[in-house]
Length: 290
Image 1: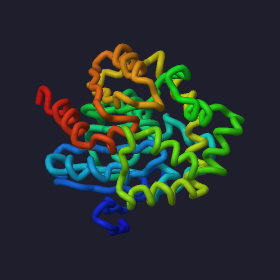
Image 2 (image 1 turned 90 degrees about the horizontal axis):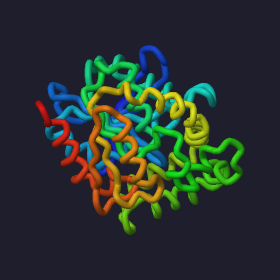
Image 3 (image 1 turned 120 degrees about the vertical axis):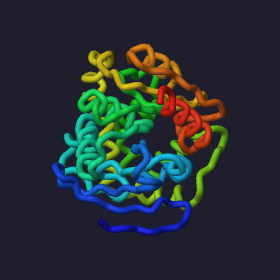
């Protein structure tokens, strides 16, 4: 395993080659390995460094792992457009857990990671003790998504393609200006990491491919959502301008074992907007019934 040490704002990372998929995944690992494991999955336009604030706090009481999705950050890209889908991303996490010999984990997943997290719970419920998800779209609900998200997901959309391929800087600016609560900012080192990613051709391919394949996983999951028995905490930013909070209520209604926590003074990126509030809600949920 290769270790990459950077500034103290950034997480220390290393890489591992997956047993089955054989691709290389970058990840960060914090905390005591004897304690319960929490796996942190990122959204877009992000990589594992999105957990710069949350991971260190959680590591006081948990074994914490944050990983980059294939094609993002320091993880290798997949070999085809079709491979970027929610089902395959779920398999990547399952493969990752098997490679690192993690028998069970709590999974925390925002944005595009929400649906893969649900699919892991369906496919391999014994691997997941609890799910904590934020601000994502597990069902095909265009009416609850912003014009940007709908553009990314629409095949052949010139606007969506332009934002991802030709104007990634503009796309990122929209994400930051609209995604955070009232001008909240993130450390320069973190934003620089995201900016470098946004200009990478592999990341552009992964971003656009995943969004344009997203409807497949959504359509698959909705009719079987009631089979997800893993305890789920749905956390939502009260002022999310990318995905309407109404969807959070619908998710909780459709899942048999879910509860909702709305985080005030937070936008789409709850994990960066309100890391302390997120950790407090997550910890309360994790420790319930223990």
